[in-house]
Every structure is written in structure tokens, then in C-alpha cells.
Length: 463
Image 1 (spheres, one colour):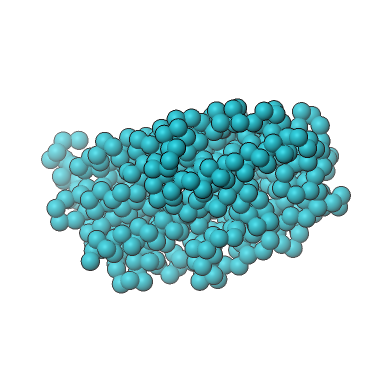
Image 2 (cartoon, rainbow, N blue to C red):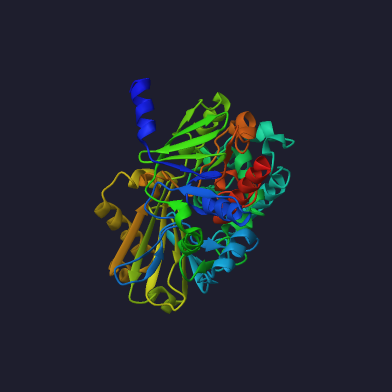
């Protein structure tokens, strides 16, 4: 398009003016908008999807059972999410965590209770020792500036896989550690910088909190579904939120900033970009972003996860005293939970296809995936698991305006080379999203905190 044609296109676009424009109506963008609105600042939120909530997505199955297809859990110390949930009237109930857990390792099925499989005491002890060591190292990582940690260069020059291979001797313990990484990041240990892993552990308190149900990140669920929080905030904001407005261009100039979608131009004094870094890097900026910032966004991939849920008339696994929690070293689904409503009816089995398995099975057909998922469920819980009356799946890598879950992660070398660019404003542009959080990075609570932090930056800039 010639310059004249582009100028004509811009001139023809409907225009809106506001104080602050926010790109993205997930928890980060909505929290920023809510904070600014309470301070008397006019905002407009542009959301590419036809819904709010971002990586939270609650939908009813064929029988009306409400299912969380995206992020769903809240745990202790996730105080900002808890406060927001309370303010909008969202209530919680405990994740089902009673009875025996199952571990499948090298074709053998072991029953255990507690957070760590007990079938191999030697492997269990080695895994515990490794986690204690990781907690100790993580405490040395400054949450605001991970790249300044005393051993930042050494930690950022290796993957988590490298550390496990050196520090953990037992193949079984190595498998447990790998599964821990996959369950938290939906990525493989070979994908992650050790420094990023340590930062993430510190941001969530400790590795035990990241992995646990009781007194952990998976402790409770929302009666109304997690997306309800965003929906209620959206109700408060009303016409300040515009759906179906995928932004493609952001123009900064001396007197303000212009944010463009196909059907609208919003002119404002400041902007908050509240989408994952990999998506923020796909927007067109005029003038272009500094190469330092742009190269950062090229280096923060998203995790790969397919979330699957089978619905049964009742949670039959409870009849035999099982919690519904499984860990496995084989199959597409290597981690399961009892995801039934608080009433216990219907029974819902939740499985995750994560990391490399997500990459493999994401390329299969839906019917192939379903057959493999049910084969895993049967292997874990018996023949009754073969015939759910309903089956739901979502592949977050295929979601156009997400492109993966649970969050963006940093491979080796990125914190050391580009860390300061993650949150640093560029002119009138400010960055939000759970990937920018210093506490509970990667979680819903981190998203809320990031939006509130970006809003405070904007208030300071406007003043």
C-alpha cells in the first residue's frame, strides 16, 4: 500500500479518543483498566476475541456442566487474584484431594498418598533432595532482576535438563523431575533456562507450592469458573471494552499514541500492551521498537498443552478410594486430576497433554487424540473410563490469540541478555501480562499483579 493510500485508509477509520488504551482483555488488561478507572482515568480496552478472559475460559458441556478449559486453580499467597475474586463475588471450593494417588512407571502401577510417589523410596528421596536444592538456589534469585543473581551467568547458560542430568542420578528420580517441569511449564526440561526455572520457583514461593494441591497452587477452584472474574470486571467496565478488535499497528508520536485495528483507531496518551510477549512481538510499531526489545519477544516461546476432560455419570474412581490424581512416564496424558464439581456429580476426569506430547498429539486428528486419551484413562482407572458421555478438549497452541499455554518461558541466555527489556516502558508503551509478573509469574495471580503494576506506571506517567 502506498503512503497516500495508507493515509487515506487511516483518515477513513472511525476514531475514538481516551486517556489510556489497553490491548488485551485478559486478567492483566482488565486489572489495569479497573485500577485506572477507579483513579478517574478514561480507558478503552481492545480485545481480539469475541470474549474477555484471555487464558481463562469457562464453558458448559453438553449437559450444562461448567468446565474450565483454561486456567482454573487458586492457591495460598495468590492474594491479588483472591482479592479481585472476592470483590466481584467469585467463590471457591477445594480441589478433590482425598484418597490414593497412582503412579505408572515402566509399565508398573504404584499406589501412594501424599505429593510424591513412594513406590521407589530411593528415587523419592533423591527427588526430594533435588527439590530442596532447587528451593535453596531459587531463594538467591532477585525477583525484580533475575539476571543479577550471584550465579546468573552459570545458571542461564544451561537448561534444566542439564542440571537434572548432573545432579540427579536415578532414572526414576530424573523422570519425576522432568514430569514436574512439564506439569508447571507445559514444556520440556531441555527447553528451559535453569535461571528461569529458579526465578519461577521463587516467584511462586517454592517448588512444593507449584506442584501441590494441599497448600499449593492447585488447592482450590472457582464455583462459577475462573472466567467469571473477568466477566464481572467487564460488566463493571461496560462500554470501555470493545471485542472483536484485533490490533495490528501501534503508532507513537509527539502528542500521543494511536492504536489501530481493522475497523478503528484509538488515540490516547498512554498504552498498555497486555498480551503474551510472543504476540506483542507480532504487532507493527511505528516507529519500530528498539531491536533490543524486539529480539526479546523473538525469544519467549509459549508452552504447549492440550487440556482434555471426560465426563461420567459419577466419579467412579472414588468408589475404590482413588483421588483421581495420576502421574505417568508414558502415554499422551501423563498427569490427571479429579475435576468434578463440588457436588461430585458428574464425575470429571481432567488430563493434560503437555510439552513434547502436546506437540506430537496436536498434529493428530481429534478422533485419534480422543482414542489415546481414553486409552490412558482406562490404563489408570479401568474399563469404566472408556465411555464418558461427553468429552471436551482445547489445544491452546491452536488458539489464534494465545498460541500456547500456560505462559511464555525463557530459554537459556535470555534473562542474561534481554532481562531489563521485559517490563521497561518504551515511550508511551507499557507492558503487562503474567509473563511480566515478579510474583506468581505464569499464573492468574501474576496476571492481576502485572495489570495493577502497569496501571501504576501509567498513572505516574500521566501525572
